[in-house]
Each structure stands twice: as structure tokens, then as C-alpha cells.
Image 1 (spheres, rainbow, N blue to C red):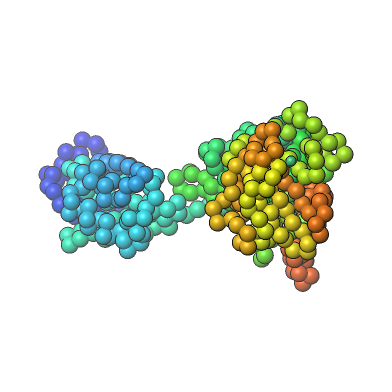
Image 2: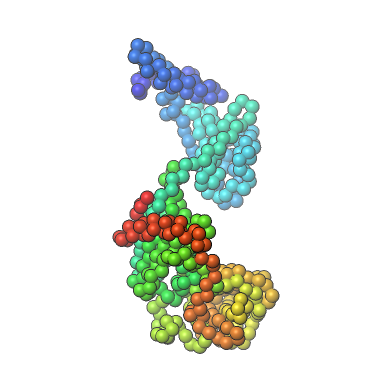
Length: 431
Ligand SMILES: [Zn+2]
């Protein structure tokens, strides 16, 4: 079907502004060809006619891809791509039908296509990962058309073994197309999510712990990949097996029997990635499995590491208090209180009487008060008496309703079969 190359010089003489006419002509002719070629009698004759223009036109588009830089607006990118002030203004105006041209984020791709004769064909703006807007100049202004990209969703299962930390293990997973930041945001937090109430990812993780997780993977036409929700996960921590299943009806994780994974208290009050090595030489309390110098749990972490409230509650103090240094104390339901000591800073707005949510940042790790090095001193009190925070395991969320249990179990069985297929380390397509 390719036309003879030596006819390429028969194209119309270059002239500005006629490229659209040429394009329409070409398209019409392609259609015509398809139709007519179905009739054997006339095919010979037509095949050698100006159908060549199609090929010539296609081959000679030049597309430049540019990217919105930090702090830039679309008009600046278009000017850099040599659009005239008029063209720029009209293109920006046309885009505003689908996206706010002043609100495009840095990194947005902008493609400018021109013919061989340098007339503008179109400008394509990738306004967000799933949508692009094509801006086309016409006689009276610019038109805009929106395309939704077709995203295919696969189900993947990954499996990993921990040698030093969950972070390092996730970095080692043989997955293509994910930056380090994306591995943290999409993979690591995905594994942490269902188990944040059951496992202390700062103090409990041991070499040899392992995990499997079933993910949704979204693949766009350009091949870029994003990992969505973790649909099911298993974590084996010091020989104990934890499993969690996402139940879309309720948008949360449940255990095997449909019980909520949620608890009143999070297991760890600090961003676990910044907690120093699990295998340090600090005094280790074999019975409690914690470093313990007094009542309370110490999390050795870099100064500045974020500290979270482990449960919903009301701040009862946020100030300097003797050996605790900078301290936040929070009152929770049922007579519980938590204390967070030695902080280097208390988050702005955190003061007595203020309500906080579970997981909300209340301050930063430091070594204020009686502390020999940067760490968070975390303690829990029940009815005024100090207790072991790590032993508290109060249920919080509602279980799956009994009339939904059958459906939950069906979904769970499917996810279990996916988990089983992750016997080897590494990401694999399962669906
Ligand atoms: Zn302490």
C-alpha cells in the first residue's frame, strides 16, 4: 500500500495556512481508497493516484515535546515553542474549556506539532495522567478536544523478604518503571496501610520477615505505570502471620473473618522509615521485645522525624515538662492517655484543648529534657497508671455486616488464590 517514493516531489507547493486543507484532503482520500480498493476493477488505477499525499503529510509532521517547569504557566511554554503572542493567547483560552491554564502542575507535557512547512498543526497538553487536551488552530480561533486515556488495570502480586528493613526490601523488588519515590508512596505505604494497627514497623521488624501483596496496577498508553490500592496483603512478622483484605463496599481492610483491621491505637507513633537500625547495641528487653530504660518505649530516630498521635483524642498538654523536655500529652477514650516526650518541636496549633486525629502529626523527634540522644519517649497511661503501650490492642472498626459476609468471603477467596501465586520473590501479573 505504500506509494512509490519517487512521486513525493509532486506535493503541492508550500504555503502557510493550507495544511489543514491538506490534512482533510488526505483523510478523505484514505477513506476513498479503502472503499474503492474493495472493487477489483478500479483498484489498479486508483492506487497510483495522489494517495501518496497521505504518506507525505504523515511523515513530515514534527512534534516537539516540552514540559511545564516549576512556577511556569502554559503561555510561557508556548512562547518558548515559538508560538506567536496571538496563537499563545488563543490556545490558552481554548484550553480553559477543560482545565485551568494557570493551575497546571510542573511536569505537565506539552507537545507542539508542525508540518514540514512549519505551520502549526496542533498543541497537545497532558493536563493530568489520565486526560489530554488537543488544541487545534482554525480560521477563527482555536478549538479544544478532550481525550481520556485508556488505562488498563492489571492485578499484580509482589513478594519480598526483609533483610534489614521494609524500605530496603521494597527498593529491591524487581519492578520496572517505578522511581524510588513511587516505590515508597505506592508500594511501601501500601504494605504498611493494613497493618499499621497490628505491627510496629519501627521496632518489631526482624530479618527474615516476609510479605506478599496483591496490587492494582494501572498502565497508560504511554507505558507509564501506577500502583493503586493493595487489595490483599500478608505479613509474616517474627513467625506470626497477619493477613488483610480490602473490602470495597466499606473501603477498609478486614481480617480473614471479616473483623476490622482498625484499632483504637496505632502501633507506632513515629514515621518508621526514620527509626534507626533494629539491630543496634542499645539495651534490649528480651521479654517485652522493646528497648526499655523506664516505663515507656523509646524510639531512636533522627531529630526532626515526624511524631503522630496514635489515636483520636484531645491534647491535655503541649509544653516543657521537666525530664520529658518538650512534651505532648493526649487524652483518649476509656481513660487512656499517651505522652510523647523529648520533642525538638511541637507542631503549630497543637496545644491543650485541641482535638487531634489518629495519625496526625503533633511534633518532631528531638532530645529535649533528660535525653542522651535524639529519640521519642512514648508512654501510655490507663486511669492514671503507666501501662505497656505495646500490649494494648483495642478493636475499633465495625466488622463486615453479617448479611455481607458471604460476599466478603467470595472476594477473599479470590484474593487468597492471588496471594498464593506469589511463591517466588518479585512482581508477577496474576490477572
Ligand atoms: Zn524514654
